[in-house]
Amino acid sequence: AQSVTQLGSHVSVSEGALVLLRCNYSSSVPPYLFWYVQYPNQGLQLLLKYTTGATLVKGINGFEAEFKKSETSFHLTKPSAHMSDAAEYFCAVTEGNTGFQKLVFGTGTRLLVSP
Amino acid sequence: EAGVTQFPSHSVIEKGQTVTLRCDPISGHDNLYWYRRVMGKEIKFLLHFVKESKQDESGMPNNRFLAERTGGTYSTLKVQPAELEDSGVYFCASSRSWDFRDTQYFGPGTRLTVL
Image 1: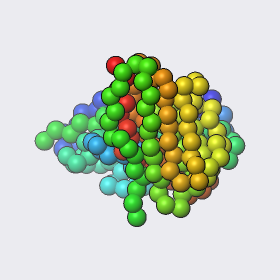
Image 2: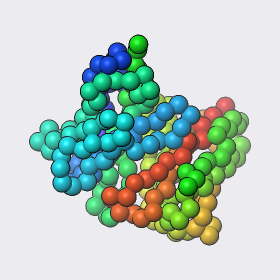
Image 3: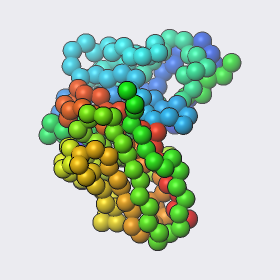
């Protein structure tokens, strides 16, 4: 079965600093990878996804992630944090090869941004 | 276009009682998913509907959980009788197709507390 590991349940950065949220996955088949964000009192919102093609994926709000097959990683980055980026971030991978989309999530990383 | 909506937003019940959660997907989305997040752990898949049919219910914890999607529109998830370990946030998501590349749109979740 596929699994996702997010290192660090909480990450703290200062406004303007680099954001790096780590995600490693295990999969026996080529994975499709996703980052979702949850702002307070809202549903999960898709930030970006990797399916095929270019391994550097750009998402909304200035976030990007790079698929590195050799490292089984899909880390999320943003060059300069804003206060509005404070939220919980979830990495996910599709499971199985059945053609039906079932997401397997990591435990989430809460990003704290200080002034 | 309205997003995925869930009702209620919060529910507090006593152990042994019954609770029914409702999800209204985005109009025109044939695929509907239920997920659950228990106490800071990962978000876990429960089941997947394609229209009114259960495509995959491999994540349903036990037979105290019953999901329905009559008419292929909204879905309900009933827990009867509720146990303490059922507490958590229940998310619903919908997508237009089951293709891996199609985005799942999530609702804000229902926070269930079983006392």
